[in-house]
Image 1 (cartoon, rainbow, N blue to C red):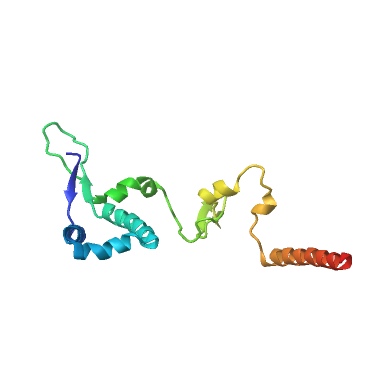
Image 2 (image 1 turned 45 degrees about the vertical axis):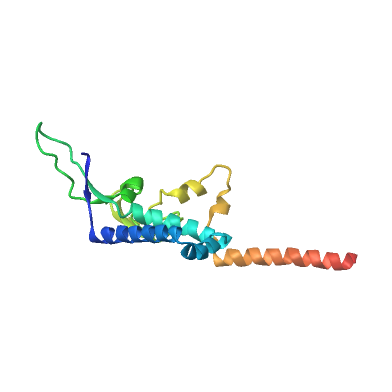
Length: 181
């Protein structure tokens, strides 16, 4: 078998809760006096939207509660399979591309430069730099045809300048509108 299941006590309690909920729903389906309030809830649009959102979160939680160990490659013929000491979940398997990526900082997901500095060897001294982020923000903000000035972060002075220019344009429009009226 390419994996061996691992049952953690928290996972067992979670699946016990799922079984108890299933048993309660089955009992409600058998007895009309228990089913009637749930049928009224099922007719509510807000309740169904909430149920869909909760079902999504529940599916993610249940995928994270199925744990296993992957079998290591067999080195000799006839040898018993050995399993990895690392316990993974189904969610870990689904998001394996995130586990393989190297994230060094979590402070600014759309930043162009990292907030943590790193040492870089330059000819001859070693300097501390803030390297560029090679993330989605670099792909978003490096589109051809977008002027470089629109990509610069807005400083408070440039924001003030833009607001003043907008106010002057609005002021000029309102005075010309009053003069024509």
